[in-house]
Amino acid sequence: MKKYVKTVTAMLAVLMLMTSMFACGSGEAEVTHETQRVEEWSLNVNGKELYVGMDMPKDLGEPTSYFEAASCAIQGLDKDYTYGSILVKTEDDGKTERIVGLTILDDGAATTMGVTIGDSRDKVVGAHSTPKSESETALVYAAGVGVIAKFLLRDGVVTSITYTLGE
Amino acid sequence: MEVAVKKRILSGVCATVAVIVIWQLLTALMTPKYMTSIPEGALIAEYYEETSPHQVLFVGDCEVYENFSPITLWEEYGITSYIRGSAQQLIWQSYYLLDEMLRRESPEAVVFNVLSVKYGTPQNEAYNRMSIDGMRWSSSKWGAVQASMTEEEDAITYLFPLLRYHSRWNELSGEDITYLFRRDRVGYNGYLMQTGVRPVTSQPPWVPLEDYTVPQTCMDYLDKMREICEHYGVELILIKAPSIYPLWYEEWDAQIAAYAEAHGLAYYNFLAMSEEIGIDWERDTYDAGLHLNVWGAEKLSTYFGKLLTEKHGLTSQKNDAVLSGIWAEKCAAYAAEKANAVSPY
Image 1 (tube, rainbow over the protein chains, first blue to last red):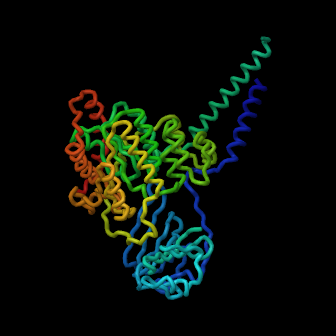
Image 2: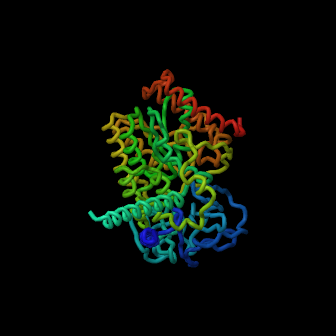
Image 3: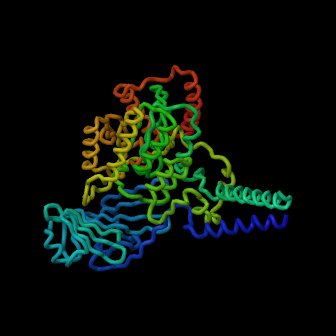
């Protein structure tokens, strides 16, 4: 009997060792992004400097409009705050609310280098230097660690400017 | 054979069986139960409890299991249906779920909600798990696993979930013991009833996208869904449920409409038909327009049932005594839950 228990224990130990080699958790993806403040890719809202990755300031004032959406079946809220010409997207897990995206919606706001909606491709490159990648429809810049800045273009004119988490 | 050898073989077999039993027990214990929280995760497996066939099968994301009521379809039109939906169900998961169901039964129509065509790559392990873990083992499940895994996932963890969930030991709760060997029903033929009311007060801005082209992978899976439906002689109906978020861009809508037209499929954008359906965004949603509550789902189902009857030839099954008995029980359970809700009407 002793030998039998030993065998079972040994087999279980091997299986447990195998399980420890695999990823752990409850199935909910743990997303971590290291970000940092880069002045060039920040936006000013109501006198506060905002950049992707920072905690959402509590004293930013009343937004022009607000929308929130619960993630289907997963804890947390995706929130959209519109402050005039700037859209601030955050993720709130109940403990911290973090900025995950900043978008310039119209020419009422501009990047720190003065680029706004309606400007030309040349103006973007002149102001923000050579992009990390480019195509007919977009100019993409590395905007710090784990953040990208994307200028969408149509017919060579900027239609959208977004700073967001990315590679 | 010597007695000692026989004894050794017997001992080895017993030890192996004991290990398998312990492994299965641990798997049952550690696997999330999706009962007291995140009930959406339990929907996929509930399908196997069904004892009668369905005329209509729905596949898709939360926009099907929150927005359509099979009970209403039965009560008002005598149509039997089942929703095989799950949170953020991606199009390849819909395809493999459909593949599995069409091997088990012969519906007259399949309804696919097209929102997921916006996602061309695997998104999130937690959602993958909710769509796939509940499937029984088959080539369909294996296909779903292969198509769905994110870079961080291992296929073997779907085969042996304990490899994924073993570290839940410090999260175990009473629920894990209560539901070790059984589950309560959370849906009504795949419909998850919501009885809250939270009006729409705002909508997010329409931020331009770099590319509005539906990813080729999604179009390929749409082809596969169409082909498998053709193979089994089932009509495929495409729908976009009336949810105001996530945003459904008109450029995507145009591509789906063009696809439907090119292949002779029906496509209904119920979001654009909200007014005609009679959806009241003040009272018919429980989360500010993302999904309908039960009163909204019933309105939509009443509208869709009429279409299924008048345009797609579905007929009432209420004269079938066996089916009527089965559905009477479902309707009673549904009515009992709804009776506890505070109606906005």
